[in-house]
Amino acid sequence: MRVRVTVPASSANFGPGFDVLGVALALHNVAELEESDSLSVEIEGEGAASLPRDGRNVVVRGARLVYETAGRRLGGLAIRQRNGIPPGRGLGSSGSAWLAGILGANALLGSPLGPSAVMDLAVGQEGHPDNLGASLHGGVTVTCWDAETRSVVSLPVPEGVEFAVLVPDFEASTAAARAALPATYPKADAVYNVIRVALLVAAWTQARWDVVGQAMNDRLHQPYRGRAMFPWLDGVLGAAREAGAMGAALSGAGPSVLGLAPAGSGAAVASAMAEALQRAGHSGSARVLAADTRGAQVELLP
Image 1 (cartoon, one colour):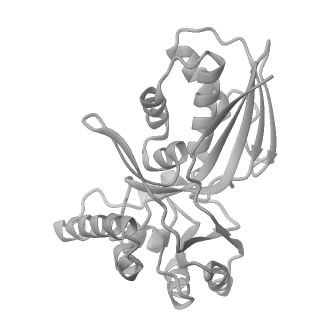
Image 2 (tube, one colour; image 1 turned 120 degrees about the vertical axis):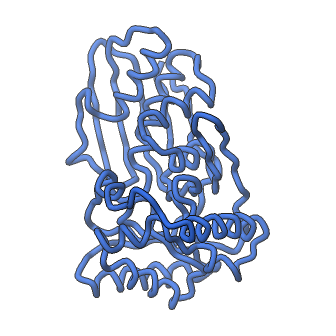
């Protein structure tokens, strides 16, 4: 038996929602898994020149983790990856790979793990749940996954918004992005973000696009990462707003940037962000993506 797992990209943090909010985007990694006598990994598309094809491969590691959890012996796997998500860009490539391996192996074993167990394994490896919740469930998600509360709530994606995505032609380390953050925050900054997360969720559910721009502001991660790693960020965010974006923010740990644009203006926002990045001396590509509202999909193949 073979299985095919399709996992969407994700843009995490979603402005002020550090480690909480995310949106799944219609850009996908596809992995096919089949039990074999040995390990083989084929990779096409994004990351084909750099991703490992041995036991270090994240899809392999995710699959092995499921077999170990289920108490089953894994002899080998034949894996074929077709990647549309560029690695190291803040679009959930790592999370999608963990989910592909975990979901694929779970299907090969007859699905002994339920959705909560899948999230447990993935969060245990990825370390933060916002990308995973969005990619697994689709749409815009509020994910709270810790020792006390384990919930993923999907919000509807209203009509009238487009997702403009700027993808610079260079990678950023998630570990370095985490290291750029302070160990503690002023209470005023914590309150600032709590207010804006609440406002953003309320605005999103009611399509109150007039307040989304205010709600997308952040004081917990974006200013620190911008200063330490992405000095061009403020210029790109400003260009997005000038081009008509309702709001814009660093995508995950960066360097990609997500702009929320009124319907019909996503291309203009994407173009403005790419031009601002180029003026700062960097190249990149920009596109308009739809939200993926289905989340990760698993198919059994003959």
